[in-house]
Length: 610
Ligand code: FES
Image 1 (cartoon, rainbow, N blue to C red):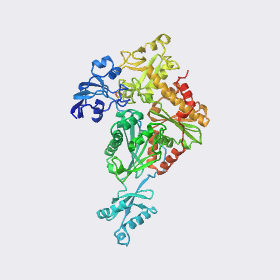
Image 2: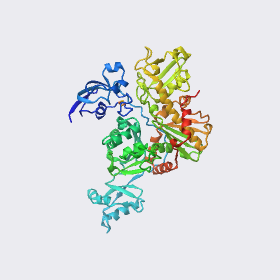
Image 3: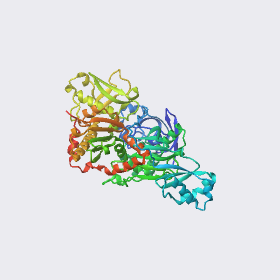
Image 4: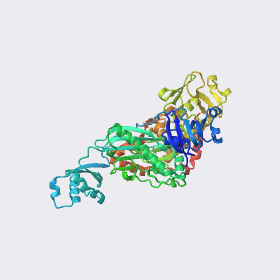
């Protein structure tokens, strides 16, 4: 196969790529990131680049997404432009900002007792003068540390003569319960670190802990490198099942994302990756399958069965992670195909399972996971909210990163907005969109069923001027006036419909769970809003658009990355790990698709409150 040089400006990254490779794939290989809501299917129009030379001609599909101005200026969709000669491209047109990745969550105290413990076995020359096997000498020494009937397998035992030859005074044993994972030469108990990881579809957050005392050393986050194959789990599953070596590539990308976090945290805290012995993951069910390299075949078709919902604990040497090979990688238990261990983490960290009064936890992302307790039982469901809350499938939507409008409000007749990092706006993220629609409802720009009013029906002429028509009827938020700098940001009728579908699913989910437990809106005493969107959305806007019911007696508490908090707790405490396993068993999962009420509630839920 012929290979050509591909150069990306302005970074001037150069690489060799095979003829026929898409520019999207070449950019990903060069470590450059583009918005890819549809995973390269040519269906979102977000992966725009300027191609100076070397790519295949413009396709009819691209014409659907590009304006005549863009076409004249050589803009292309990177996923639809393929290399056919030495190529030069500029990307992205508007650089994607650093994502505002939510790292903080609530922290509940736990008893510090990590799953893996290190014991230094201080062996004296006299110990070896006894008439006993080396295995017996070691197990006796472990007994002195309180480990009864330790299990030392043959392969561990086999390493001892060599280790004791290098240091006759002792070895350090790594132990889980009674099982000895291995030995290290000399005293290494002071070097013991662990990483808690929340592996999200979009972002991955890692928390590095010193496991000798439970101190948090640092946090780092990165975009999930699988994102190049689509922003939602459906695109990833499709890629895993249809692309040659798709599954192994996705698994490598998951390892690669985590390894970069490990490298960075170890570098910053001056420790060796070799000193990380435990890694504890939470994530949704699809991420779980892709991380372990399990084919998602059964997840993708009715009745959508995961391979297993049990917690998994695997030796590091069976993974591609940069850690000590004697260590262990844990994945918390799942609840169902549509509810992963991230929700278990949310319940654990909010303490919902211990609540004696009705409480609700909502983790809103591409999917919305809802867990409700009446103080005795826990029921949960997952709603295909769609990616609108993460800014995907929205005309000017983007993730909550630098340049995203994250807040919109009215000041008299004026529409005001806030942009992350206070730079000219590049797009609008989920919390900005909810605010914008709440503002449009308040200003009488849209009707309760989501239709844009005609100019003549809008009482205030200042607002009426914001209504324009291009491909769709739309409201111009920015860029309409000379004082606005940056891109024109609009909210189209289609965006409003996307938001209605997303909120309709969430409202139906909440209602069905409340019916299951016989609760009414006024019974709920606290609502936890978890996840990036949940943390940043303004509760009053969420209520104004009807995403949340009016919970008269409830306190609304944003809990940040509560799934990550759950991962941290279980890394630090075996007791919390056992608690998480029980939570997964306690949650009664309600399949909305099987509920007769769903369609009715969904139809009501898409409407905006009057
Ligand atoms: S159109 Fe190219 S990634 Fe969606």
